[in-house]
Image (tube, rainbow, N blue to C red; front, side, top):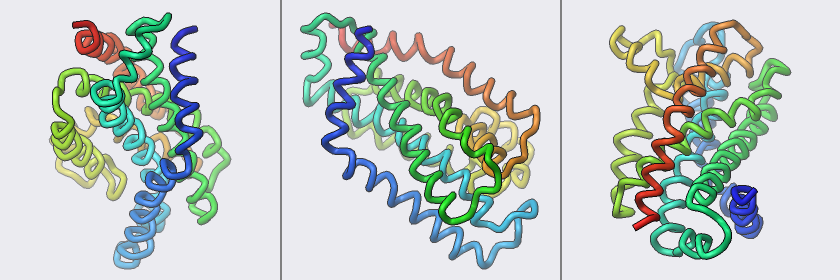
Length: 249
């Protein structure tokens, strides 16, 4: 399939820059984990019977995956589209616009899972994982990775300036991250904020990752995964349509 050839092209580039790429996406979440977990955690009481670092560690895995997908399909896609003209070069070959967009989303989803696995490995090494269910987290991360890739791709499809991504990061990603249940339970927020949290994709990802890391599996996890899958289904045609308008003038 042509979409796999586009994905293979991105992987060929990634193999040349993987170390630098992973290091920068690895260091920041690790700093959050150690500073908040070991630093702030000494002043925070146990949450639901968990030490603070153990509470936030699975959320850091989910948020790392979110940022990886989001940055790849915003800055990464825009640079390939606008500055490097990579997409235009691809379209000179036997691929369609949908193949190019699909390959980009597949690549961002892969990176989302990969960076989530990197942080998951760290928290395993730190002894913050309690269950073998954690082995299923990488597979689950494909779903939120796809959701955040599609969300970012939709925004890239309508923005004309790379500076506009600051709005996406500051007004969408950062609030989503801070109020997703990574650092404190959503149940501690006001009722109206808890309702809004259900529309926050990272909240569902955090809930599933935390449950798997701690071995607290319950039927409601299917609902969280189902919400993410539904969002992905709804966003797919929108993202493709918006990017088609950018590429077909």
